[in-house]
Amino acid sequence: MDLNLRIAGEAGQGVQTTGSLLVGTFARMGLSVFATQSYLSRIRGGLNWFEIRIADRQLFSGREDADLLLALVPKAIQTLAPHMKKEGVILLDGESSDAPGCIALPLTKTAKDVGGSEVMANAVAAGAAMRVLRYPLDALQAFLADEFKKKGDETIAANRRCAEAGANIFGNDPPHLDAPAPRGKAVTLSSGTQAVVLGAASAGAKAVFGYPMTPGTGVLQGLAALGDEFGIVVEQAEDEIAAVNMACGATYAGVPALVATSGGGFALMVEGLALAGMLELPVVIMIGQRPGPATGLPTRTAQQDLLFALRAGHGEFPRAIYAPGTPEQAYHLTRRALETAHKFQSPALLLTDQFLMDMETDTPPLDRTLRPIDRHILADPPDNYLRYAVTESGVSPRAIPGGKAFVIVDSDEHTEDGHITEDLEVRVRLQDKRLRKESGLRAEALPPERYGPEDAERLLICWGSSYGPCREAVDLLGAEGTSAAMLHFHQLWPLDSAAVRKAVAPNKKRAPKKIFCIEGNATGQFASLLRTVGALSECERVLKYDGLPFTGAEIAERVRHD
Image: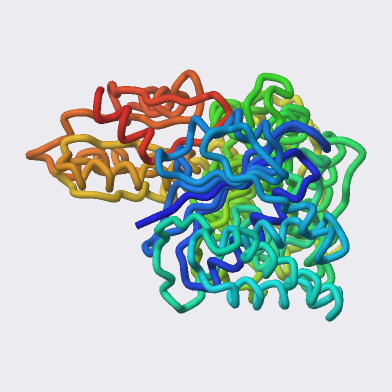
């Protein structure tokens, strides 16, 4: 079984803190956790909520309906009560409530009376939630001791008293909800942000550039926190243009570099991306997608930048595009993007989004050992070294300036030794050389991941962060007798059309009767791309672009009735 809990309140009320306390506690108890957030782009006010789904089995998606709502303000009930299960429980921080079925609890007052500060209302709320779910308070108390260890024994004791007061706040007749049984052994959690950070750090990224922009900012902060441990320099540039140009300079000097931004910031970086294409620099850019155009919905989620990422930058040059669907994939694909960029001396783009970056879920322990990628730099360049020597693969020998080789680069078209030229024959030869890299990139492209039977009647094609919801939809459809499978793409470019066609219909005698493309945009961008490269003819489109992520139940419902 599974249970869905929401903590909702205004920005600044401790919604995230309360959620984090419960997430950490549940994980220690051995419960499977899938946590997400919904927040507005404001520092104070509005209505934000933290959602925690727990189960005794692996979870891959959030849920639209909730079993327990911890409302820190009355407006949370007005907005979220319609999304409660019929037998659900609503708790409101306050002395009284007019909302039907709502239990008013003085969470903030109790925190002030027991702990001496209203800030500890999050511990009171967490204690109340544990009581409703009939979970032992000891698990929360142990987590609080570790969480506030650096703040000293007095702070730990105050928070533990508040948690106990929360558990006892109902008196002798607390409401109860059936909750999944803990499995005992603690589970490891990771968010998409943490995974990208650790993937970049373990791969040996040494220079990170960006300008703060949700949801890319967390990557900058995370890598800055690891700066001393991994020898990373993080620079908040004056703007996005400076950030990408700094990355070009760093990679020219031989330093593995990462740029962290979001869609609007990437829009300002396209000239620098094209510069990396001409100079053949291994620049890696993580793009946190969010609804546009312009600033759109700055703190919501979307899959709207695929075609933009594919065509960004003037002129034609090769690139690789990856789109992780889980924190584990985010870790490995961040490393892969850096490896690929350096091997082929071409930009690599990592498409993430708010849903992926903020989600916390069960993840195998991520290896934080420093295992630097191969930068493919010549140890002993020849005397006649040519930076842009024409090769069959299109990849030229790479040396770094300051050593034996004289490394010349130019943003204009250039000769093999790097000097500017307007010789048209040289232009064609060098452009053909650059574009030949795409054959190598395509040969090493990651195949899509299939989940479900090969002879499924319905095939759900998805990419990026829709992995989990689509996987849950396949399970839901299968449980009711509908034959379904999922094909998830975590590399979006280059695509091997023949390989994709084979993956779509591995059973030649029984191809899927219906194909659905599941995307978080309004135009079906990936479906269009698959058609353009001849990998897919027609498909039904299941699209969502309201700024919220898919849920497994939502996809199953839309596929079931189509």
